[in-house]
Length: 370
Image (cartoon, rainbow, N blue to C red; front, side):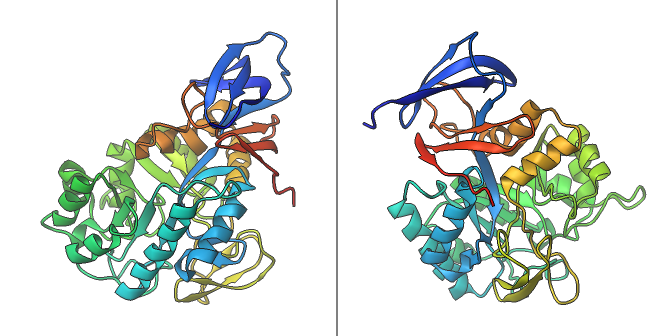
């Protein structure tokens, strides 16, 4: 067992509010002790949980194990202690190879990488007419492919278009596996979404992006999410979703949580990068296909936290929406909260959300201050 580390003190996020406390920990949190003398200029929050991430530091998750290691290390330095590598729609062989690379990194692990509990399968069971920046390899439901993939790594989240699964066989199959089924890359109407939710779908992928909208006479996926969702992802880079729409979603969906949807260009200078089979152009603040379509983001979770603060969210709520909400939704009950017995995944930040210290399973990691 890893010996206890020196305790850290500050205003600690306990439940949904900050309390002056001292945190004792090794690889897990041992105790959270009220401490009136705690440093009140620093805040201790759970490590970020990012359930939707395609890459970073020039690395694309579809490129194999070394790329997965690179992006997992990069995002940890920005406070993401748990990450779901997210595949893109691709030929069968490419998806299988991507899962094999992810599985290798999951087996090996490393103290300088975010923890990878499984995979987010984004496609290929999406609508070929609502690809967004997904490559053009959408296919009908294929349970054999799912069986092949889970031989390598668990599918924690799967994004599907419900209109491509009219009998709900995909939803039933994924639900049996314990996978969270999310609606995305879809031209469904609200009725189709409600039927999918009734059948077992549980969330929505990058809300408002690559889906039918919230028209008041022709409600689509976004309208179904605003009216009925308990959980949904959103990309708070302030480009994918207008701030007013993000605040609307916050009011409507109790389990709204932040993702990066980051791709290889995150953390890199302007230039050309890969998203699966696509060439993507980054200007340093956004990533786009040749036709101007947004192609993932260059967002990191620490910037996501700061963006939420800039929109007026209190630090406690912003921290919950960048960690706890997603951890709870994904069933990762050993993380996402600062409480005895949980993984010692913690960040020390200031009131502006700037990271001063990172601990991943109790191991200190130097933040990226670039």
